[in-house]
Image 1 (tube, rainbow, N blue to C red):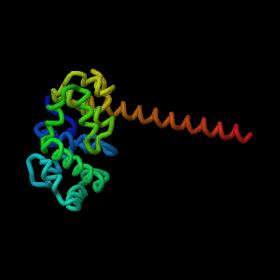
Image 2: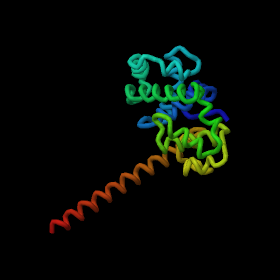
Image 3: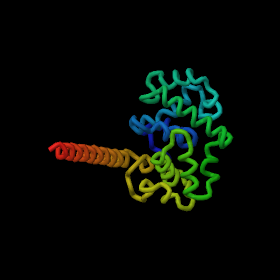
Image 4: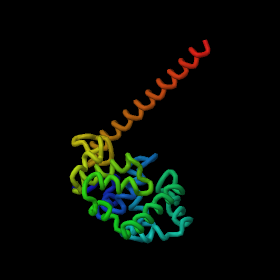
Length: 207
């Protein structure tokens, strides 16, 4: 099934044929709408004058010029300077560790645990991002080594709508967005209750 992550046919077409674009989209997917994050790799390729993205080219790009590429309106990210640096660091790691071939990150993994450990070791990939990308590979890219669902945590659950791994059309995107909004509201409520409890404890201590 073709990817539908950006909800833009041309951008999704690049994600389909270019695994580096997909990985960069995952990296950019923070503090901006998911669709924008996965639109950005295709726009980055266009601005670089390429049909696909090349890790060696990006790793060797002049940092200030790459920042300018990211910052040109429409900016590729809300924070173009820092995210240009993270994308460049990611590409440099791929060149150093995988000879610039992003597919070696997963084709060489013996099982889901190793796949996750390789992803979480990449610049810009924390636990949650590595789990979500593990789930995305398993659910939509056919990369399903033994134990991938366990390595992906709750994001690997079948029938869940927790992340980009579960987005296949506008309806599923809406469900994922609802889940994220509910999770954010729950976290905010828990933080407010925790602050209230601390204030009550402080007041009692002074009494």
